[in-house]
Each structure stands twice: as C-alpha cells, then as structure tokens.
Length: 232
Ligand SMILES: Nc1ncnc2c1ncn2[C@@H]1O[C@H](COP(=O)(O)OP(=O)(O)O)[C@@H](O)[C@H]1O
Ligand SMILES: [Mg+2]
Image (cartoon, rainbow, N blue to C red; front, side, top):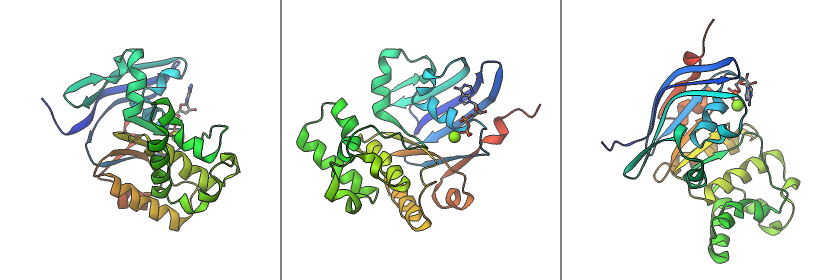
C-alpha cells in the first residue's frame, strides 16, 4: 500500500565489529517534512544517516539487521539489500551532506557542478543550477566574482554552505544533513533554517542537530537517539 512515508525503518541495529552501536531502531519519515536526529556525540547519528544512502557499505566490519524501506514512486525497496548496481541511482535521490566540508580539489564552480557532470546535465543547465544553488544557500554574493578560485580558499562557514549547494544542485528527493549549521554564525544559521523550511514543499529532510532551539524551530519530528542505545 502506498503511504506518504518515504522511509520506514523497522528494527534496525548496527554493530561495528563486536561493538553494538544501536539496536531496534524503528522510525518513519513522512514526505515533505523535516526530521531531526539528536543525541550526544559518538552515539551513532552519522552512522544512521549513512544508511539512508548506503554509504555505510563503504565502512568496514559492519553488521546490520532490520529494514530500511524506501518508497520510491510506486515501488518499495529495502535499502539494506539493494543490489550494488542500484546505488548510483539511489544516491541521486538521497544525498548526504557531510559535517566536515568534503571539498573536491577544484574551483568553487566545479565543486557545485560536480554531481551534475556525473549526470551528464548540459553546460547551460549546469550553469543555471549552480547559480541557483549558490543563491539558495546565501553564498552567491560572496563568490560570484571568483567562481574559478579554489574552493579551499573559502572560510569554514562558506565551505559548509558550498557543500549544501552541491547537494541541492542535484535536486534530491531526500536531503541528509549532518549538523548543517555547526560552523555558521547565528544570523546565517537562522537564514539557512528558514531556507530549509521552505525546501519542504519539494523535498524531505533528515538532519542531525545538537541545538534544541533549532530542533524546535525547524523539525516536524525529533528522534532522540539515546533510546536506541544499550545501557549495559
Ligand atoms: N567505520 C567505523 N568503524 C568502527 N567504529 C566506528 C566507525 N564509524 C564510527 N564508529 C564509532 O561508532 C560510534 C558512533 O559514531 P557516529 O555514527 O559517528 O556517531 P555520532 O555521529 O553520533 O557522533 C562512535 O563510537 C565511533 O567512534
Ligand atoms: Mg556525527
């Protein structure tokens, strides 16, 4: 049956080697909402985020049980058992934005255009989408005169917005954000929050946040991660 839950997780557990990280995690992510995931550092939040686009498969010695069902148009797939050949397609739809800006050794422009080149988007369309994405993350005015400069020249806060722009340019269905405003000043963080809320009309967002105030302002539901971590 088709629901408006894009993601349904059932009894998900993760071990790294012998170490249990979390167990029996169940949650749902309705379409066009913002879900936040909160909890102390080192508890497994990033690991969970990496399961949504299956980047977790690149980690070693993982043991995963349970289901992550993704409702994609009329089909439902379990991401944990998705064939490897389907991963590139999945990663166009579910896009992860790293906590630490993972810049590519290219120019500002090429960093945002990267995913579009992989999808063979035409140069003229790429130009339009790069400009729009940079405007959306409030970086355009700061970089429009130096789009060909190395991205590594940017400040930490600019880099954080740049990698958000790279993800937006791909127009994902689900955007995974790992502490997206951690290196921004308060004014900028509030503007990015407002932008994220405006994105809900055509996207679904899952975000890790440490900030209780931010969680209250932007999320439709908050998952307190601690309940899935063993106490023994
Ligand atoms: N690839 C890995 N192999 C082994 N342990 C890992 C790996 N990645 C993360 N961990 C450990 O798993 C725990 C959860 O990490 P993480 O998901 O990054 O937590 P959080 O994002 O909540 O800070 C931490 O103790 C971390 O050191
Ligand atoms: Mg983390």
